Length: 385
View 1 (cartoon, rainbow, N blue to C red):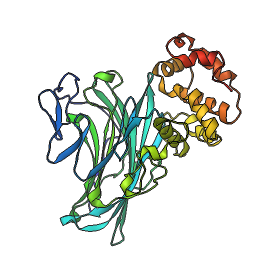
View 2: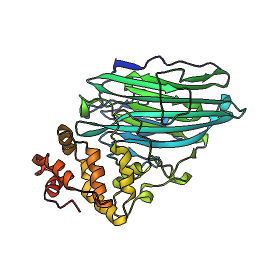
View 3: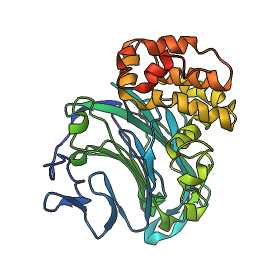
View 4: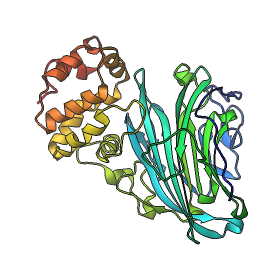
């Protein structure tokens, strides 16, 4: 068995820009979609479904996606807003390992975490952690863990990649060792490669039936970025997936394979989006991402103290702190951590914590009271217990 080596820890690269298709200014996914009369379309066959501006998929593939602005699409192809500024478990799955002539020669266990970050007032996808364990039927075990994160600025990417020869879904990671893997006799290849035409980093684990792509957010071009930023996770159902951690994953799992629809995880008194954010905070995923907000870890305890009634009131009073970009930006300019404000607001309703300092903090953004009603409501004391 031969092992490939990844060589770059940090790379600063200009990404390629294909011609935009139509008035949106977005480009099609080169190799998977094409521009047809000012509209991108998936190349069918073999790519029969998906968003041709983001990712197209084959017939047997189910997918979960995290996109900026921010939104999340589950493996049931349901989409909702997801203003979650922390690290979360997107999926956890076991797949058949297939070698030559599609012979089943073992299994792959894969965990995918995604982490978000604040940029100005927006929450954007900052990076992805992928851990894979291959167990051959004959007994050999191969483990790899890779972290890829970064942003772009006016077409120039700033990538950071780390990894280890171990199954460490939550790190720690080190500068790249031999984190890619090849078993040529069995036609097994795990690779991470840059697809410059699409400004994507692609984790291609074909033998495991897993493909993951990541497009970084351009903090200067923002909405004018030619590619849609975010993470896509495709799972080939021909490898007979076993969905794991089904009560924790944010990408959920296909309902017809033991997973859940969004409506099935909805909490009393909360919207679907609020319920998904609640689930993400409650899952106690290690916040091992760069520049993690401390409140990404502490919010779980505050939410756990809520009953149905206080949880509903807390989200009615506090959720806007995560969803109003102008307030997030203003809070940051005033030295405030908006995730910390959300946690303390929830604690006021569910743990009896004091609320006066939150009112004072919100008052520092009083200039927004005319645009965001909750700012004035907080100043007036209407959103404190």
